[in-house]
Image (cartoon, rainbow, N blue to C red; front, side):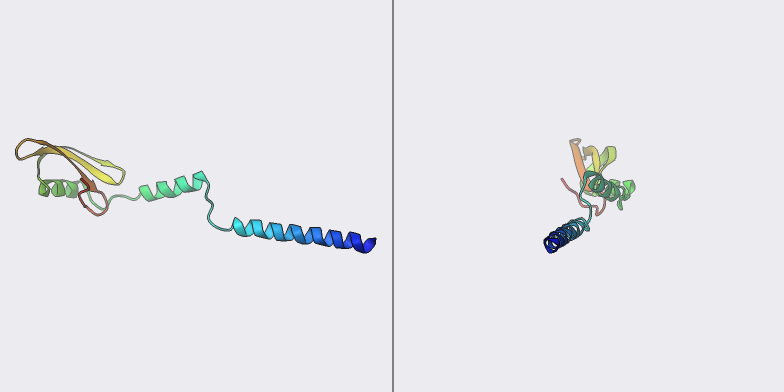
Length: 103
């Protein structure tokens, strides 16, 4: 009877060690909870733009805007509103990191 109790106890102990090891191995990767993901996105968005406001204005002028009425940094792009040489209203989106025109 003692051998049976010992074997049952040893089997229980082995099972708990295996389950604990599996759980800790599964949790050893990066945490995927919302706060972690939010902080990673906030850190990525917190990087200053490589394209300055003055550079965004020059890109807009080269793209046909003659008179710039408003320019604002919205997340990952500069939003530039103004008029072309004929007086038509135009809006351009310029990528804040590489300067490409998105519209």
